[in-house]
Length: 348
Image (cartoon, rainbow, N blue to C red; front, side, top):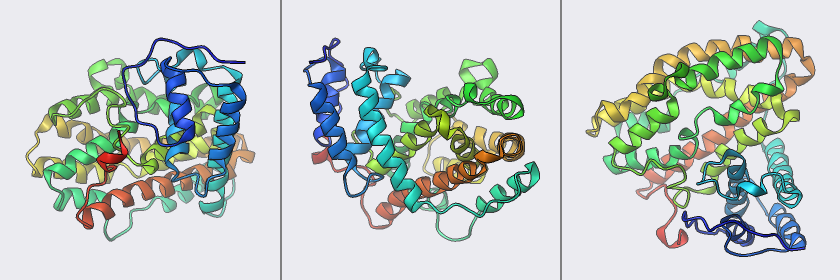
């Protein structure tokens, strides 16, 4: 059986291996692929040495999620629920999750009570002294490096909040209400101009960058894609709703102070308020969100569904671990005097 196709996409994303080489033409309407071939390619890629850092696996998973988001010019919209596509996605998710559960160290579980869970999460996400990407941006980064940061972060931030919003219908009761409170702020409280996605798009434009979603997919490494794929995988799988809640809690608890540092760096290299506004917004917003996320969201979910507590803690630890790797890649690249972006010869 051969799959059929839609009109070609104009995005021109570069392939990173055999599976993305099959998916991009399929979703863009430029070629056909046999169902057995797609399944076999997914199994081959899933058996790679490191699912977290593998370029083909992470780009392919990103593309498979993109057809659900509709984030890449409606790329492959008709394939969203095709069994062969779902099968390939499941194969990659299984490898990705297994790698994460092997390498991510979760904290010891407290009693499944609201305040105890919140205390554990606040301890897990407490600021640490020493070098960090946000401190480097505040004090040292040059204008080109700030632009790189904006490009790297665009993979998530131009879709900000969407990955965690998949979790809304998967919750009930107090946790659902808390998640809705956070997400309402993320979407600007009903004001398009204050949506965090739009604030970031405005920052991209103000910095002279392309604000179209996916414009910099070719430039970012696998770990940047993995950071977004992680939260999407958690949000799109109901069995991982606890991990999605834990991820969001850790994400909100570690945002406010770094955003203040990044805003300082943006202004230091000469960009204006139109670029820094996104980060200014998060200094206050996430200081509030972290309290809601720790107690009302994660704490309440653990009380109401204590069997989800291990996944809440795993999701929080996975957020810190994977985002830490992504930030370390950027920081170590800059400290070594090189770009954090993929070399030009690998992107076309």
